[in-house]
Image 1 (cartoon, helix red, strand yellow):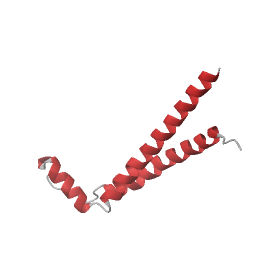
Image 2 (spheres, rainbow, N blue to C red; image 1 turned 90 degrees about the vertical axis):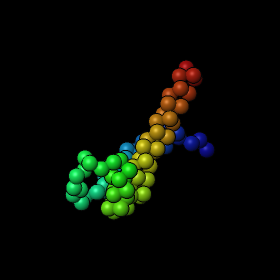
Image 3 (tube, rainbow, N blue to C red; image 1 turned 135 degrees about the vertical axis):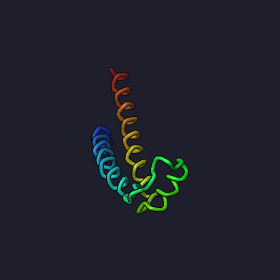
Image 4 (tube, helix red, strand yellow; image 1 turned 180 degrees about the horizontal axis):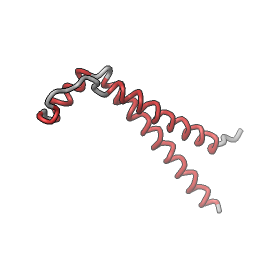
Length: 91
């Protein structure tokens, strides 16, 4: 039984693009602060990160979803490059 890699790569590409779109929007909503911050420009990066972790809905899950979409896209892109190189070698 032969596995059709092109079919799986297309499914992976669609899945990774959807996970980027959905993961980014949901991840950003979970990751962002929707509470107005006073004197935003006077805070250091560490203070802003601590405030964001405290005020965000679910900071770790949001960051995970943001990274998950990009990892899926990277894996699918590597699969396409590998398949492209294989097809050029066979010709």
